[in-house]
Amino acid sequence: MGSGVFWLVRVDEGGGLLWTKTYGDDSDEQLAYDLVETADGGFAVVGTNAGDFWLVRTDAGGQALWDEKYGGASYERALGVDLFADGGFAIGGWAEANGAADFYLVRTDDAGKALWDATLDENYSDLAEDVVVLADGGVLMVGATRPQGGVADLWMVKVDGAGSMVWERRYGGDAYDGALSALEAASGDLVIVGRTESKGAGMADAWALRTAPDGALQCP
Image 1 (spheres, rainbow, N blue to C red):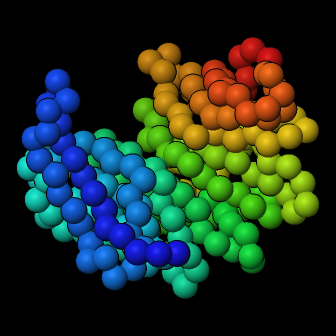
Image 2: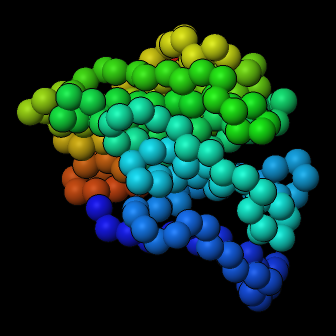
């Protein structure tokens, strides 16, 4: 997989460099994919370190305060992070399983201690790309699901505050479709963006969907 370190850069509103920090020791694969600003002005950066979810917590100046790893014997990659109302973190991504992958979610407290984790399995390959903490305390995960030998559909899953699935939705056609990011609108609707090869111009196009709070598509 190679090697590297997390790299965090802060710039001012005009794009001028304020500071740059690195985290890790370059001894193994250390890839950062997402971050969130915390209530104290610091940051939580997530990604992969030696095949585990890795969370690095910093102060407002980028100085590392602590870090934690999460996962088991398989390879795990964290691609999204969001904050709960109590300051804890939702860390989402995927974990290798039976030669493919499943959605994988870790819930922590504000000090990074794991409270629970959840594995969500729909098909042979389920790759989560983003995670969103919802206003009701649930968590939305979005990405793609693909049966063995088939094509991928966009897959979105909501779990409750204990990690149990509430609902799941699939959208797509006869070619690759997948989600890359999501947010909850002020109305409670869900907005998802990604890519589609089964709609639009027929190759790889940007794709945006807006759904009801239960994931039901608002417009075809």
